[in-house]
Length: 369
Image 1: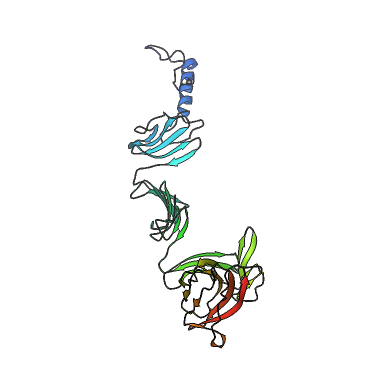
Image 2 (image 1 turned 30 degrees about the vertical axis):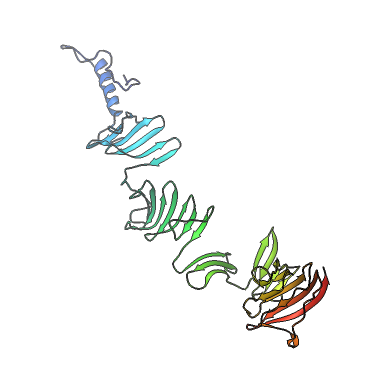
């Protein structure tokens, strides 16, 4: 008779025989045939014949795997639970398979290689030498790493030829720095000895743009590397552009001069009372609206060539205030114009420097304000 559902074998009826029983073919041949069938259905120790049905093993454990080796009983495969199979070496977990995927595990020194063939370039997965992260290393067939990706909970680091090249952490993305830092918020930081460069380029390299920081006197550079204009947009509308000739157009698509403005512009204005002494500071504004509140002596800034400014000079409600101009101011014909003395009246004066002197001109006087 065959084995039962548990795999237990029982001899056919009439077995075993007792002493003195005559061996008869009617029952002996049946018994021998049954035993022969069961031997055939048993797996040979040499593996001859192979299995014709499912092979079932004991669940086992990490210490005693259900499928193990005779000379190393702590290495093999076991079933840890429902839909959970695991592989161990010397009781240590190496890999597990569950319904949703697979996981490669190991000790702090375990290494996992993925390769297409022996002697080929491969991928090495290993724990960090220090820390709790994992390294994923592209290696050559000698096993020396030439590109590495480190995953460590709070950071994602990229290493090339033994040096970290880039990392991403909670602060931002750092290229050439292991500690990107920003005045506020997060972003991208690029560091490099000498010149650090960020380049944007189209696929044909016909248009490219660079932003770079130079440790030398060049400072921060914004560079277009070809003859295309550099265009600036706000609210999805072109606001300004610099063409290949260096002409800046504001509100102008084809600037015809170094500064070509399509629309109005405004200069900074400074409004103040003079008292008896007043110093012109052009950082306050190139339009100076000043009220004479005393007989005033003016001091002008250094006469840097090309600088200019305008003074709208008004008498206060008292009037008859006088003005003393700096010696560096030159007037047409060498004659200093008199200031309107009538209360609450305004005069307009324009000054331009040549590098040595300020040249003043009378832009109109005795305006009613």
